[in-house]
Length: 278
Length: 328
Image 1 (cartoon, helix red, strand yellow):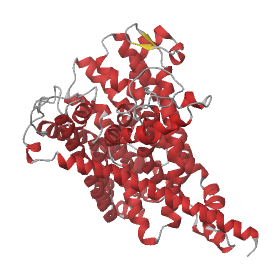
Image 2 (cartoon, each protein chain N blue to C red):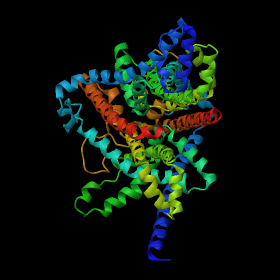
Image 3 (cartoon, rainbow over the protein chains, first blue to last red):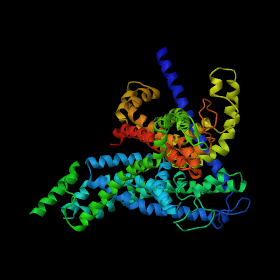
Image 4 (cartoon, each protein chain N blue to C red):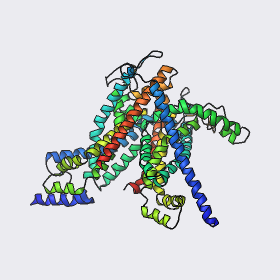
């Protein structure tokens, strides 16, 4: 074995060693984060989390108001984002294919996908909170919807793209009109994939904190009134974690665990759907 | 006869890229309504981006009118005296993001190479899925972990030894100076790195997967080692896509709010000491917006938001242009 070959083999061993080391290191750190979260979250876990409201410092309590508030905020946001996202995705893949408008929309949508979420909060503050004179659940949902729409648009477009043109052609040949082909053939065949997009969008907004800071705010009490401030898990976690009180910090960990489990469950669900879609 | 012709147009155009040639508004009321709704929804996406820009500009106007372009390079941010300059927040944002990128990019690339090239077949899929799932964890979790778990560890095992090590070295002693308090720009940068790592790795894995198999195989066929294939074939072949992945990660790091707000220390000052508390654009907004009592203070915070909007737009647009070839 000559010197050059030996040097190349040594370089390869070193590089592979570093790559394996880096992967193990990162996996270990991420496992560390999850382990802490599970440990601290489960220590604070008790059934009353789901039945009692957030307490004043020093008293026992739960997260019922925050959980209900989060479900409301996310639910309303998805009710708005889903139709808009699906229709826009339909335009991109069905009507506007190849047009300059759809390339512009696609580009803008990709940028929106990655825009800092705090900007959505400021935007909604400017157009809803400030003019209407107060923080509200509606504003919080609007901010979340703005984050969810690009996710739905992107997945809908991708999934419609997987529908074979021969199916559309067959429907056209039977005399079906364009809108009829889209609603009865394309949607039906991409149904699972489009659902994946909705679940992904849910997972994306479930843990968003920054856009809610200046829109829905938080509320110590139980409320389902979307026109006032409303309790929600992410902002509760932020406030309680930053507080000096041990019980509040424990509740923050419990809330963080609930949110992470929800997001992971949604992500896994979307993967299962995706597998059946392809 | 006309109907048949129209159907033929529709059929033949559906096959190729010329589907646009089907006229929008032909046919029944449902046809028109549906096509109109789709177009409206697509325009709404444009409207969102336009709305961001217009509303932030209007909100920022009082501050921009008062301070002018000097807003960007003024080093004082003082709500009490009403003097607002963005430089402390800009500096904090750039320093934390730079730390995050420097740490995250090599590690993310290593993971992507491991998953696509080195890992045994049975490990590739689960590891890839795990990385993608981790990329979906809300950033507030990383913030909490950073504050309660990582900051004390970082203080004891990294900050204190480094400060002691460079105590008498010129220049370095001012970049790494005490006291070691755990929170600050360096901690925020490291936590940001950990947060964007799975995301960058997942994108890089997809990019590397687009390198044609026969190129890699021809490399191995002439006797190249794994590392030589990675360095001389994979990297040059998808350099644009890899850069796009880095820019996407940078876009995340620049605008990340929650992971940073917990651990940056909330101090509006400029310092070369990377262990010192500071503020980023996003953390300044998150910390102060609700408590801004003067209109000028709110307006200055929105002006910061506008700056963040412009910076991230440029970074994300570049990322998209570089990744375009990959996705299409």
